[in-house]
Image (cartoon, rainbow, N blue to C red; front, side, top):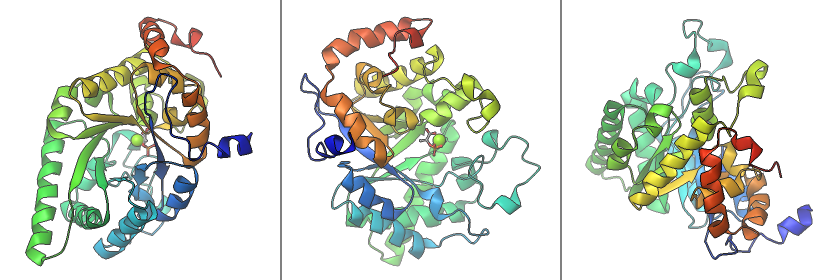
Length: 318
Ligand code: PEP
Ligand code: MG
């Protein structure tokens, strides 16, 4: 089976009815680009930059170290695009286990991701400059996690502009980026007009979108049976996000686990998704599914699933 899939590595991901699908990789370290290329991914859809920040006893990577790491990822992809997500620490990704702060009673709702970045602008500017510098070496997209508020969006956009000006003032080379937002808080999925005003593309983080929509801690085994990607509310938010982006000709992808789950591939295709980002190990299996799918037949069926009170009864487990 693995060998049969491996033969698909250079096969373009095109459906039976001729729809081109973009299959991207999620990575945690620059070295993971080797696995992304080996799997035939056509870019990195999610570089979880927080892995550069974790397990270092609070000694954060400086601009040069980050720049070198992002640059290595860009070079590792040989000209294919790389989407660098700004740090998403907090909640299940504490910088340092020994510093677990009892004051944060519910870290998933606390100072996490963009909230953490905006709380320390000089640290955030360091990362923004490093990403802009890496963008001089290839196609770089910047992706911002956990946004919900217009004020956060505007602060972020202003800081990116400031980072650019800082580099110009220092005479340091930087490149253009496309700017994207993670849609992973229900409030974001319900404020798409606001997001589309500011961003070039959106990326749906289903791991957190499910967690926050259903109030199920993604790391809590005792409620794992209620963590349901097929809950009608989750599907509605995913479908609306895809549709809103398509209506405005903006890019949209899914980068949560749902994108790499072959039991979800056809539903996502039917909802109009054309870009998937997943762990490199899933790319070929998802491609195999895509090659045998006809989106013209899947679209009406996906609408039925969306309108159903019991979607899981309509989605086959294989
Ligand atoms: C997500 O929330 O779906 C996502 C891709 O981000 P992370 O899993 O890193 O929170
Ligand atoms: Mg997330």
